[in-house]
Length: 234
Image (cartoon, rainbow, N blue to C red; front, top):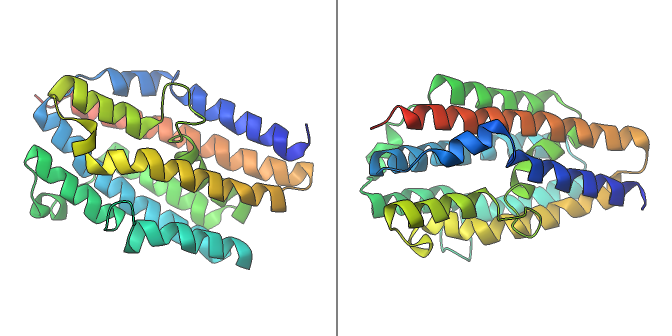
């Protein structure tokens, strides 16, 4: 295998390992109630906003060709995803209607302290890291959602099945989760192509791995925080 093939295999192993972590297991083991489901959907909208921040920061420091790839990616997220007929934040708000949420519930939502800390940590990497490190940090969250890579399905699929199995809400009705099962598969594959063009040396590889490790650590903390707060909701 060449350096990029070895790197891709390592990144694939890392996103699969996420689901064996204590934090992910704890989060996914919390039984859903309607109120816990509402909390999750609102927090997922805030997470979506954080992703837009971070990709914008990454775009600012990336080479021109990479800026174009990110711009194409973000057009789905910020403007209109043809799969859904709306942007991804609006899609999450629309999804909330299924479980009794209103737009004002999202507008007045607060980010809990542990979750906010994770958002700041992702911001820090996106703003302060080498562009390859920052790029990989954001990329890994979509790679971790890619059901072609993650055995047993990515996070959106697994959470969607929890809504289906524990609350009786078909995954197709959870439109944001359902769209992301497909969208993040395509996004992560398109963005992953940039490694073929820009990872040429062991130093390049190490910058990528730094972003991957840091982002996956924050991701575990984030899921652990969500599980912690959800357990405290009746």
